[in-house]
Length: 128
Image 1: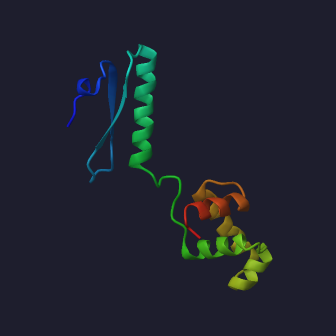
Image 2: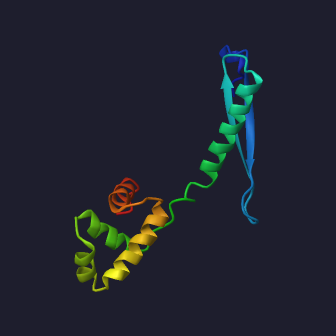
């Protein structure tokens, strides 16, 4: 391990955030450091806030994007192929209202507002 002074750093700050996990999991500590210059009180507050945000993002990476069911992935895959609600209903052997129901769930799980957004997000996350 190397000390900050050994690297030529004389000033800086580190702030830690403890992320409280669920009852049967250990709490996690995330530390964010800034060095190279003296930080004022406002900058320290920003560093502390950033540490908390980063800690939460790392502790709960899947919060917004819940897993899609096999049927949701299938329907989204057909949408990626340019199929309409009617097309998808015929291909899957389900009612159009059921296809719409699945799309509503997909939109909620992926935190999007329309089919193109859902397809793009699903492709980027290798869900389809």
